[in-house]
Image (cartoon, rainbow, N blue to C red; front, top):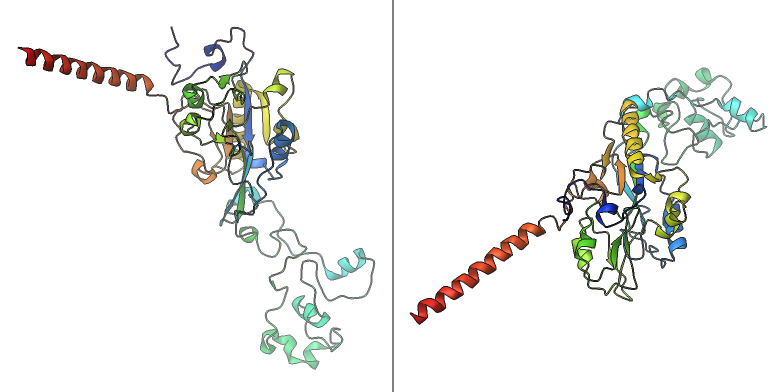
Length: 379
């Protein structure tokens, strides 16, 4: 008798698939708040699994040259640029210094020179006179030196704007400075956009529609609760591709077979960490027993909320969602749609029992109508 939740709802997938002594379900927790977009996970995945090279095209999507999960990209690092200041939340930046930069004299001593350069750290360099004016030093002579008595020698010192020199103090010329972000501009003006980075991967759903519709048994559930494609059995029908609610699985164009992340099934069997998680330098990708990862993720969200990041939320962690919870879930800093994820994924095979029931009723009705027609005609 199949479990009543076999197609929908909370479930331990490995025992449901027939594994009598399955180990704890393993999975991924990806914390996007510490992802730096280095793509080490993409490279490690390709190297370990022998995935063909791809993602070498310039897509015009920031630094995202992969674009999406494909048969040749089992990991995809998304770069989302938002026109939103990084300092839009005041509390996290309240303790960051925003005072003026170090003096030119201190900079000269640190550089090992006593000759005045006329510039402050962070001010774009140029001619000595222009740099001195930008640093608020008043009028200068033709060699760039400060005039001996500026108030008496030149009335410009009293009002630098009178000669078109602009306001006193450093002026932004459109070039990067050497000061830390925020100094001289305030915490709200540090940048005009922010990056959201996320290493996307197959979700290894509790209720995997791709597995349900596969006619050859190419897709199977492992003892760790993950979903793996056996490429030597795949016939390239493509049913799994249309069934996946996340659009993860893809066909390789040169052979027509379906490919996706295996969560490094061969490494798991040897007690090793998946290649992507092993290579991640910030531990944005965390691997372990799924129950432990969910507890760790909930604690991380609470920490971010306490630190003034109220938009932090988990995605794919809930066993009561439309796919029964994901084996690879995420901490996001914006709505799922921003990252290209469906807001409310539902396993496409959830309604199969109802569909077959209705199809059976319709078939019986048609058979009854046919019999009635013959009986009525013969009488």
